Image 1 (tube, rainbow, N blue to C red):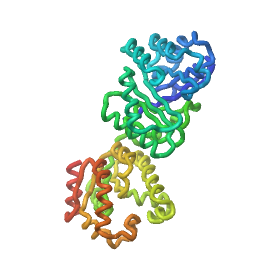
Image 2 (cartoon, rainbow, N blue to C red; image 1 turned 30 degrees about the vertical axis):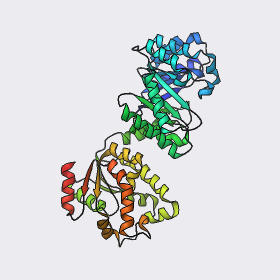
Image 3 (cartoon, helix red, strand yellow; image 1 turned 60 degrees about the horizontal axis):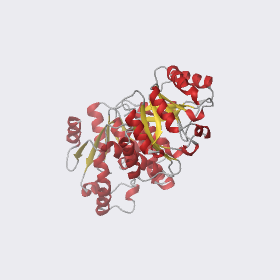
Image 4 (tube, rainbow, N blue to C red; image 1 turned 90 degrees about the horizontal axis):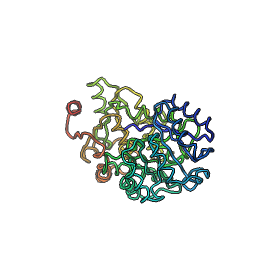
Length: 403
C-alpha cells in the first residue's frame, strides 16, 4: 500500500504554527503532526490552538503529539500532565489522532481508550526506542499490545545500528500485518540507516510515513518531495513482467522472446547496471564485492517504476533480498524459471562471466547453490515455469497465457 505522508509542525509561537499549518495545507501531503512539546505558550491555550491548526490545514489530517525529553522530545514537554493532556485532546475531538506512549502506563492508556472509544479522535499507541533495535518478536508483541490497550493504531519506532536492524523492523511489520491484516500500524527505523523504512515501509504494511517539509522532528526524516518521487515509482503497479531464476535457466533468452510476443521493451538488469557503472559484473564483484552489487540491484528497481510496462530479465540474486521481492511484486508480476542442475551446468559451463561459479563450475556446487536460493525464488514468484528440454517459443507462450 502507498503510505500517507505526514510532516511535522515544530514552530514554538502561535503565529508561526498557524503559518506553518497553512503552508502544509498547500503541499501534496496527507497529514501533519503538531509536536506540542515545541509549543512555547500556555496549556490553557491548547484547545483553541488545536482547533486553529486543524482549520489551517484545510482538510488534511492532524496528529497531536506530546513528547518528553526522555521520549526524544523537547524538555518543554515535561511541563504538561501527560495523560490529562491526552484526555483533553480526546474530549475535544478536534484532531484526527493523538499519539500516546504505550509504556508510560498501559493501564491508564487502556482506560482512556475504553472511555473515549468511538469518538472522532483516534489513539495511536506508540513505542519508541532511541538507542537500538529490539528483536522481531518484541516489536510484534508491542504492536499487539497497542491493539490490546484499545488503541486505534499501533506504532513502533527504533534506532538501527546496521542494515540488518532495518530488515528486522520491516520483517516484524510484515509478520504482524500477516497476523492482523485489518489493524493499522506505523513503523520506522530512525536515523540515516533507517531511511529505507520510511521510503519502503508501505511494502511491508506501514500506513503512514513521517517526512519533512523543511523542519524535522526526528532523526532520518526524508523530504516529502523525495518521498513522493519514490512513492510514485514503486506504488503504481507498473505492470512489468519480472523474469527471475538461477543463472542458466534461460532468463535472457525467454525475455527476448517475450519482447517479440508482447511488444514490450526488454531490460536486462545486469546489462543496466554494467552500463550505469561503466564496467562489467565480474569487475564490480572483484573491486566492490557482492554486497555493493546487490545494493545497485535494489536501487535500480526504483527507476523501473518510471518506465512503461517492460519485460525485466533479473540477475540470479535479485530475489534474495526481501525488499527487492516486495518492490517487484508492487511493480508487476514475477515469473520464476526453473531447470535441473545438470541443465544449468550444460548451459553455463563455457561461460567465464559467472563470478559466483568461479572455480566451482561443477554440477554438485550448482545444485547446492540452487537449493539455498530456491526458497527465496519460490516466495517471490507469482508463477513458475520449467525450461528443461523445451522450445523457447513454448515457454514464452505459457508465460503469456498464464499472466
